[in-house]
Length: 234
Image 1: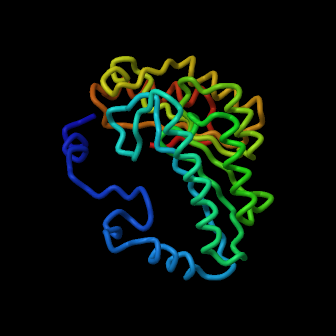
Image 2: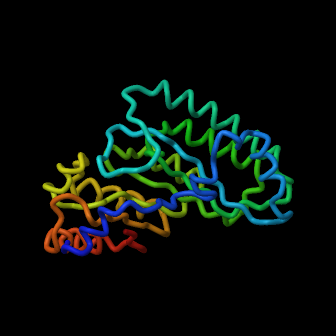
Image 3: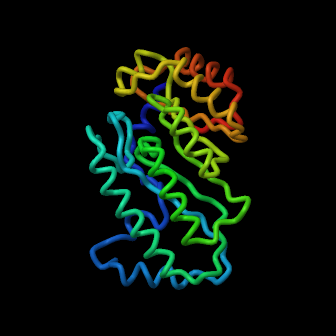
Protein backbone atom coordinates (compact mmCIF):
# COMPACT_ATOMS: atom_id res chain seq x y z
CA UNK A 1 0.00 0.00 0.00
CA UNK A 2 2.99 2.28 0.66
CA UNK A 3 6.63 2.20 -0.39
CA UNK A 4 7.77 0.41 2.75
CA UNK A 5 5.32 -2.55 2.61
CA UNK A 6 5.97 -2.88 -1.13
CA UNK A 7 9.67 -3.38 -0.38
CA UNK A 8 8.83 -5.93 2.29
CA UNK A 9 6.53 -7.88 -0.03
CA UNK A 10 9.35 -8.19 -2.57
CA UNK A 11 11.77 -9.68 -0.03
CA UNK A 12 12.80 -13.32 -0.30
CA UNK A 13 11.84 -14.85 3.05
CA UNK A 14 11.01 -18.40 4.27
CA UNK A 15 7.44 -19.66 3.96
CA UNK A 16 6.45 -21.53 7.11
CA UNK A 17 3.45 -23.44 5.79
CA UNK A 18 4.19 -26.84 7.31
CA UNK A 19 6.05 -28.56 10.12
CA UNK A 20 8.65 -29.90 9.78
CA UNK A 21 9.46 -27.12 7.32
CA UNK A 22 10.63 -27.82 3.77
CA UNK A 23 14.40 -27.58 4.50
CA UNK A 24 14.09 -30.59 6.82
CA UNK A 25 13.22 -32.81 3.87
CA UNK A 26 15.85 -34.26 1.52
CA UNK A 27 16.36 -37.56 -0.38
CA UNK A 28 17.48 -39.24 2.84
CA UNK A 29 14.02 -38.78 4.37
CA UNK A 30 12.30 -41.97 3.27
CA UNK A 31 9.37 -44.04 4.53
CA UNK A 32 11.56 -45.61 7.23
CA UNK A 33 12.48 -42.25 8.73
CA UNK A 34 8.87 -41.09 8.49
CA UNK A 35 7.68 -44.18 10.37
CA UNK A 36 10.30 -43.54 13.04
CA UNK A 37 9.07 -39.98 13.47
CA UNK A 38 5.51 -41.20 13.92
CA UNK A 39 6.54 -43.92 16.36
CA UNK A 40 8.42 -41.39 18.50
CA UNK A 41 5.31 -39.35 19.25
CA UNK A 42 4.60 -39.28 22.97
CA UNK A 43 1.87 -41.79 23.96
CA UNK A 44 -1.47 -40.14 24.56
CA UNK A 45 -0.47 -36.98 22.69
CA UNK A 46 -3.50 -35.41 20.94
CA UNK A 47 -3.10 -35.17 17.18
CA UNK A 48 -4.23 -32.89 14.37
CA UNK A 49 -4.64 -34.46 10.95
CA UNK A 50 -4.25 -32.50 7.73
CA UNK A 51 -5.71 -33.77 4.44
CA UNK A 52 -4.21 -31.98 1.46
CA UNK A 53 -6.20 -31.97 -1.78
CA UNK A 54 -3.75 -30.56 -4.36
CA UNK A 55 -6.17 -29.70 -7.17
CA UNK A 56 -7.93 -26.57 -8.42
CA UNK A 57 -10.21 -25.64 -11.31
CA UNK A 58 -8.08 -22.57 -12.06
CA UNK A 59 -4.76 -21.29 -10.76
CA UNK A 60 -4.71 -18.11 -8.68
CA UNK A 61 -1.53 -16.34 -9.75
CA UNK A 62 -0.58 -15.24 -6.22
CA UNK A 63 -0.78 -18.77 -4.80
CA UNK A 64 2.30 -20.52 -3.45
CA UNK A 65 0.51 -23.69 -2.32
CA UNK A 66 1.19 -27.12 -3.76
CA UNK A 67 -1.60 -27.56 -6.30
CA UNK A 68 -2.31 -28.25 -9.96
CA UNK A 69 -5.16 -27.44 -12.33
CA UNK A 70 -7.20 -30.40 -13.58
CA UNK A 71 -9.82 -30.48 -16.32
CA UNK A 72 -11.34 -33.84 -15.40
CA UNK A 73 -11.83 -35.88 -12.25
CA UNK A 74 -9.62 -38.90 -12.97
CA UNK A 75 -6.48 -37.45 -11.29
CA UNK A 76 -8.56 -36.55 -8.24
CA UNK A 77 -9.93 -40.10 -8.04
CA UNK A 78 -6.43 -41.56 -8.31
CA UNK A 79 -5.19 -39.24 -5.56
CA UNK A 80 -8.19 -40.16 -3.38
CA UNK A 81 -7.18 -43.82 -3.59
CA UNK A 82 -3.61 -42.98 -2.58
CA UNK A 83 -4.85 -40.85 0.29
CA UNK A 84 -6.94 -43.75 1.55
CA UNK A 85 -3.82 -45.94 1.52
CA UNK A 86 -1.82 -43.28 3.35
CA UNK A 87 -4.49 -43.03 6.04
CA UNK A 88 -4.04 -46.74 6.67
CA UNK A 89 -0.23 -46.56 6.66
CA UNK A 90 -0.02 -43.60 9.03
CA UNK A 91 -2.51 -45.05 11.49
CA UNK A 92 -0.61 -48.34 11.51
CA UNK A 93 2.65 -46.55 12.32
CA UNK A 94 1.15 -44.76 15.32
CA UNK A 95 0.42 -46.17 18.73
CA UNK A 96 -3.36 -46.52 19.19
CA UNK A 97 -3.70 -44.07 22.09
CA UNK A 98 -3.58 -40.76 20.20
CA UNK A 99 -6.88 -38.86 20.29
CA UNK A 100 -7.48 -36.78 17.16
CA UNK A 101 -8.85 -33.39 18.17
CA UNK A 102 -8.52 -31.51 14.85
CA UNK A 103 -8.99 -32.49 11.20
CA UNK A 104 -8.08 -29.89 8.60
CA UNK A 105 -8.92 -30.10 4.89
CA UNK A 106 -6.79 -27.84 2.70
CA UNK A 107 -5.33 -27.51 -0.73
CA UNK A 108 -5.57 -26.70 -3.44
CA UNK A 109 -9.32 -26.79 -3.22
CA UNK A 110 -10.73 -29.61 -1.06
CA UNK A 111 -14.20 -28.53 -2.15
CA UNK A 112 -13.37 -30.00 -5.58
CA UNK A 113 -14.01 -33.43 -4.08
CA UNK A 114 -17.24 -35.16 -5.00
CA UNK A 115 -19.68 -35.63 -2.14
CA UNK A 116 -19.15 -39.39 -2.12
CA UNK A 117 -15.38 -38.97 -1.83
CA UNK A 118 -15.72 -36.53 1.06
CA UNK A 119 -17.80 -39.12 2.90
CA UNK A 120 -15.40 -41.94 1.97
CA UNK A 121 -12.31 -40.13 3.21
CA UNK A 122 -13.91 -38.93 6.42
CA UNK A 123 -15.19 -42.41 7.17
CA UNK A 124 -11.67 -43.77 6.66
CA UNK A 125 -10.26 -41.20 9.09
CA UNK A 126 -12.81 -42.14 11.73
CA UNK A 127 -12.24 -45.86 11.16
CA UNK A 128 -8.45 -45.63 11.46
CA UNK A 129 -8.01 -42.96 14.13
CA UNK A 130 -9.46 -42.17 17.53
CA UNK A 131 -11.41 -39.10 16.41
CA UNK A 132 -12.85 -37.41 19.48
CA UNK A 133 -16.52 -36.57 19.80
CA UNK A 134 -15.80 -32.83 19.84
CA UNK A 135 -13.14 -32.94 17.11
CA UNK A 136 -12.86 -29.70 15.14
CA UNK A 137 -13.33 -30.38 11.43
CA UNK A 138 -12.22 -27.45 9.29
CA UNK A 139 -12.20 -26.99 5.53
CA UNK A 140 -10.85 -24.37 3.14
CA UNK A 141 -13.61 -23.34 0.73
CA UNK A 142 -13.42 -21.80 -2.73
CA UNK A 143 -16.85 -20.15 -3.10
CA UNK A 144 -16.73 -20.39 -6.90
CA UNK A 145 -18.81 -23.42 -7.72
CA UNK A 146 -19.22 -24.59 -4.11
CA UNK A 147 -22.33 -26.74 -4.32
CA UNK A 148 -25.17 -27.68 -2.02
CA UNK A 149 -24.01 -31.30 -2.31
CA UNK A 150 -20.51 -30.41 -1.10
CA UNK A 151 -21.96 -28.42 1.79
CA UNK A 152 -24.16 -31.33 2.83
CA UNK A 153 -21.26 -33.79 2.54
CA UNK A 154 -18.95 -31.73 4.72
CA UNK A 155 -21.73 -31.17 7.26
CA UNK A 156 -22.27 -34.94 7.41
CA UNK A 157 -18.50 -35.25 7.93
CA UNK A 158 -18.80 -33.10 11.05
CA UNK A 159 -17.78 -29.68 9.70
CA UNK A 160 -17.37 -27.14 12.50
CA UNK A 161 -15.20 -24.41 10.93
CA UNK A 162 -15.00 -23.06 7.39
CA UNK A 163 -12.28 -20.83 5.95
CA UNK A 164 -13.64 -19.05 2.90
CA UNK A 165 -11.23 -17.62 0.37
CA UNK A 166 -12.21 -14.01 -0.32
CA UNK A 167 -8.72 -12.54 -0.92
CA UNK A 168 -9.92 -9.22 -2.46
CA UNK A 169 -13.35 -8.10 -3.63
CA UNK A 170 -12.16 -5.53 -6.19
CA UNK A 171 -12.63 -6.64 -9.85
CA UNK A 172 -9.38 -4.99 -11.00
CA UNK A 173 -7.37 -6.85 -8.38
CA UNK A 174 -9.24 -10.08 -9.11
CA UNK A 175 -8.38 -9.90 -12.81
CA UNK A 176 -4.73 -9.30 -11.94
CA UNK A 177 -4.57 -12.48 -9.83
CA UNK A 178 -6.76 -14.63 -12.12
CA UNK A 179 -9.44 -15.11 -9.49
CA UNK A 180 -12.82 -13.72 -10.55
CA UNK A 181 -15.25 -14.07 -7.65
CA UNK A 182 -18.33 -11.95 -7.14
CA UNK A 183 -19.42 -10.69 -3.75
CA UNK A 184 -22.69 -12.53 -4.35
CA UNK A 185 -20.84 -15.86 -4.61
CA UNK A 186 -19.05 -15.25 -1.34
CA UNK A 187 -22.20 -14.13 0.47
CA UNK A 188 -24.11 -17.13 -0.89
CA UNK A 189 -21.63 -19.57 0.65
CA UNK A 190 -21.59 -17.77 4.01
CA UNK A 191 -25.40 -17.95 4.13
CA UNK A 192 -25.39 -21.58 3.03
CA UNK A 193 -23.03 -22.54 5.86
CA UNK A 194 -24.77 -20.45 8.50
CA UNK A 195 -28.11 -22.00 7.55
CA UNK A 196 -26.57 -25.43 8.11
CA UNK A 197 -25.26 -24.56 11.54
CA UNK A 198 -21.54 -24.01 10.95
CA UNK A 199 -20.49 -22.25 14.14
CA UNK A 200 -17.19 -20.73 13.01
CA UNK A 201 -16.68 -18.98 9.68
CA UNK A 202 -13.36 -17.45 8.72
CA UNK A 203 -12.74 -15.13 5.76
CA UNK A 204 -9.27 -15.15 4.21
CA UNK A 205 -7.93 -11.85 2.82
CA UNK A 206 -4.62 -11.18 1.07
CA UNK A 207 -2.90 -7.80 1.05
CA UNK A 208 0.02 -6.81 -1.14
CA UNK A 209 -1.69 -7.94 -4.37
CA UNK A 210 -1.29 -6.10 -7.69
CA UNK A 211 -3.41 -2.94 -8.04
CA UNK A 212 -4.42 -2.93 -4.39
CA UNK A 213 -4.49 0.41 -2.63
CA UNK A 214 -5.86 1.69 0.65
CA UNK A 215 -9.30 2.52 -0.73
CA UNK A 216 -9.77 -0.78 -2.58
CA UNK A 217 -8.65 -2.83 0.38
CA UNK A 218 -10.85 -0.77 2.70
CA UNK A 219 -13.87 -1.74 0.57
CA UNK A 220 -12.80 -5.39 0.74
CA UNK A 221 -12.57 -5.23 4.54
CA UNK A 222 -15.94 -3.50 4.79
CA UNK A 223 -17.54 -6.18 2.62
CA UNK A 224 -15.92 -8.93 4.69
CA UNK A 225 -17.20 -7.41 7.93
CA UNK A 226 -20.70 -7.06 6.48
CA UNK A 227 -20.84 -10.87 6.31
CA UNK A 228 -20.25 -11.03 10.09
CA UNK A 229 -17.49 -13.66 10.07
CA UNK A 230 -16.18 -15.08 13.32
CA UNK A 231 -12.64 -14.34 12.21
CA UNK A 232 -10.78 -12.55 9.42
CA UNK A 233 -7.33 -13.85 8.50
CA UNK A 234 -4.72 -12.16 6.33
